[in-house]
Image: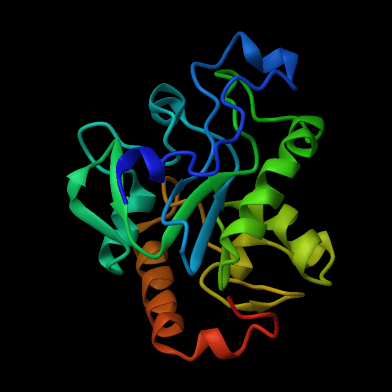
Length: 208
């Protein structure tokens, strides 16, 4: 699969103007990127500065983003590829929101407005596991795919655990840019165990 196919593979609107307050602050509308046959779909809160510039979620500059570097340890990212357009196998990267404001996080309304894009990616990829990256993504995916209350969805407590959900299992990850090395190691070891398990047989939903 070539880079063009991996970047926004479903041809979503790259000139979206649904959030007027973001149209003048963004460089790119950052839709999902990666392997469309992925077993693992990673969801962050919003594009960072490099992702906004390149249009690729979790893109790096001269070095890999901490998330893609973590995926490299699991064989899901080729760490000899371009950090700005990493070669992923088995993983797909996306965000709750597609546009970056340099001075603030997205509003709840902006997250709601972008939700159809995320829902469409989840439906079309049909992954085995969802990985919320950070607290905001955990709240959103937890509300949609588990029966837990927001008070029970604390990323510090649920990092590197598996949550049985409705249709999908979630494996939350603390934001790797902010996590300590030991917390990143904890998630890698836990996810390696998940990858070695019969996770495809435990999700309780339709097969591809």
